[in-house]
Image: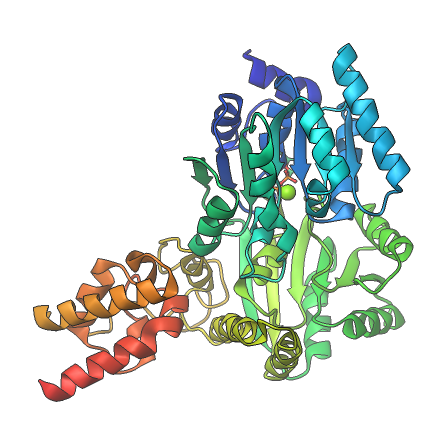
Amino acid sequence: MDELHKTLWTYYGYSSFRPGQERLIRALLEGNDVLGVMPTGAGKSLCYQIPALLLPGLTIVVSPLISLMEDQVGTLRKRGIPAAFLHAAMRSSERRALCQKILDGQRTGSPSTVRLLYVSPERLMAREFLSFSENADISLLAVDEAHCISNWGRDFRPAYRKIGDFADRMKHRPPIGAFTASATPAVREEIISYLHLKDPASLTTGFDRPNLYFEVRHAEDKWTELLRVLDEHRTGTGIIYCLTRKTTEALAKKLNKNGIPAAFYHGGLTSCEREKSQEDWIRGRVRLIVATCAFGMGIDKPDVRFVIHYNLPGSMENYYQEAGRASRDGRPGECILLYNIRDVTINRFFIRRAGSGNKGESLQEMLRQDLLVMQDYVSCHTCLRAFMLRYFGEETEPFCGKCSVCLSDTGPLPRGSTLIPGVESPELYRELRALRLDLANRQGKLPFEIFSDRTLHDLAAVRPENLKDMLLIEGAGILNVLKFGPVFLKEIRYWNHTH
Ligand code: ADP
Ligand code: MG
């Protein structure tokens, strides 16, 4: 047995690595930067925890939530790994004592010296922490939930953008490992650039979760539909996601009144109340938890059999992350989204409210695009899984056979086959290429991130007159069609009229 497997077995009791883990671990041990993009539940923590055990010095883990840090440190300690956390909710005397203990431990080479120190991003640049990091022997900097660096999603944390500077200030800049489940190429680029990753070994494992069944149900009466869904799931643990705190409480109450025990969870509860709900559900004392999106990040419960969305989430990132909490153990699980038009109204309300700050307008615009994607998802007649994976930049089969569209009587609308192939116009192709370059420059993107060459060739041959036809072109991702399609259509329409 090599050292990696021995460590995996001794501390975790696992006999083999999951796809990708070993490669990233080795890269970090060799001193390289790493970018690990893997879906929730894939096992990202291990990728920096095992190097932390094998490298001589301390590993600093930047983590966005106190609950997440406490969770992880608790689990590590149970495994006999010395770990600690440092965040703003601790007294400064506590923080100082901890730092001193680590330095002393390093000096004497004590075996109980903390190997992993979880830190909130805001703490990094605090003077006390900077002076600690100057004196400590630090072997690795791990950045968990690294997408928090991007203001593209709801998890944006400005302090994440300082992590790169923090690392550069160190005498010996340690290798950096960044990990996230957020798959969009733009976010990946931002992570690399803000963290100043040097030629990172990067790994993006497939985002498909083949054991999950996806369904969209149009439901005028959500409550009745929910009862129907629950009736189909009389056993097994489930999460019911709602958009607002009020809904979670009201729904849980109504369920309980109807003899269906359910806990509720949202960010407005005291940490004591949150903990109780979460514990009751994790320990199986209650089968259902009704929650807002505040629930779930970092929660390790592999046997969630179904995730119901009582409302339409605001973005595909959020939806996939939340739905992805079903069946992490690989057994079959179901993700059911209940939808009606009022969901759009609620989301629009959130978007308007989000627009009050300075950068309000561009944020609102971004959120509107996110919502459009979700509106498209619920009304889509093509394979739901393919829709999602394409959104995340993955090429897939157009038919999964395991979603409500593929399993419906009519089946999915074929993509790419209903268009009459025309003869490509090289002239139009050149026009479209120029347009793409122009857009790319203005958006700070690479041309292929807008449309591939292949898609441009197809556009120049098919010359679609509307967005719907444009979507039928292979490789034209839904998001990019929504975003950039109209400009290209204008060009194509003009061309059609003048030729
Ligand atoms: P992520 O951060 O990618 O969402 P975690 O690191 O929380 O995922 O891991 C999810 C679960 O998978 C944990 O219970 C973890 O112990 C388990 N796990 C990770 N790697 C392995 C492995 N090689 N073999 C078996 N289980 C693993
Ligand atoms: Mg994680």
